Length: 78
Picture 1 (cartoon, rainbow, N blue to C red):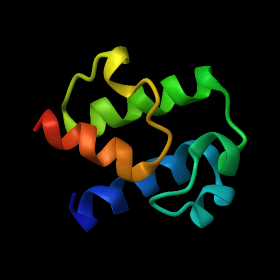
Picture 2 (picture 1 turned 90 degrees about the vertical axis):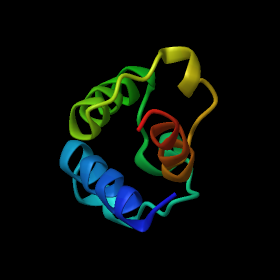
Picture 3 (picture 1 turned 135 degrees about the vertical axis):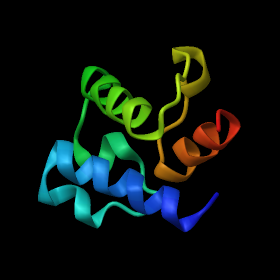
Picture 4 (picture 1 turned 180 degrees about the vertical axis):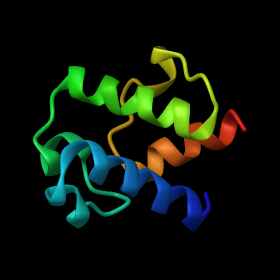
């Protein structure tokens, strides 16, 4: 996983969830750190799919709760 992908993912989280997301590290739990629910996570997934021009099936992100995990999923689709 590249640092560029992680930086872009972090930026998307900040854009969607505000300044609190700036403290989000690559291995921090998105739900705990950002205080988001599953619907908000799906909104972020939509942002990710548009930003990276990928389509990620919901079953591939089940259990993925970190930016580094998302980066790995994105890497499989690029």
